[in-house]
Length: 210
Image (tube, one colour):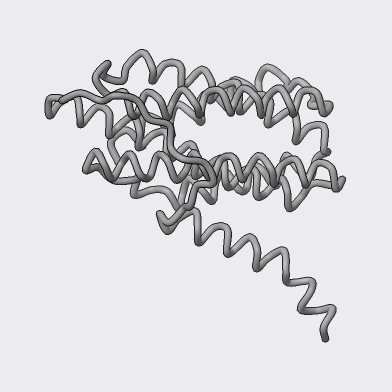
C-alpha cells in the first residue's frame, strides 16, 4: 500500500506545481531587478502591460516545459538540471506577476491552456531522449532570448523597472541555453524549429490582447 502512495508522488508534485504556477502566487528567491522609472502616458502603460503579460505567459510555459521534462527525463542529471532551471523561471514568473500588478494590468486569461500545451510538448520531448529534451531547451531558450530582445526595443524608455526585469530574464535564458548545449543537447531539425516559432507567434500575438 505504501509503495502505491509513493508512486503517486510525482503526479502530486506536478499537480501542486501547476496549481502554484496558475494561481498567480509565485515567490521569487531573488529580488526583482529594478531601475529608475519615469512617468508614462496611458498608452505607454498599456503597451508595457501587454508586453509584460506576454512575458508572463512565456514563464507559465517555461514552468510547464521544465516540470514535464524533469518528470520524463531518463537520467538523474537531466532531471536535476531541469528542476534547477525551473527554479530560476519561478523568479521570472514572480517578477512578471508583480510588474503586471504595478502596471494595473492582468495575466492572460488563457494561461491554463498555454500551460497544458507546453506541458504536453515537454513530455513528448522528454520521452524521445534526454539529448532531444536538452536540444529542445536550447532552441526554446534561444527563441525566448530573441523575443525578449525585441521587447527591449518596444518597451517605453521611461519604464526602467520592466526593462531591468526583461534584461535579467534575457541573461538567465541565455545561460540556460548554454548549459543545455554543454550537457549534450542535439540540434533540432529545421522544420521543428520553424514549427516552434510559428506556435510561439500564435501564443504571443494572442496573449498580447487576451
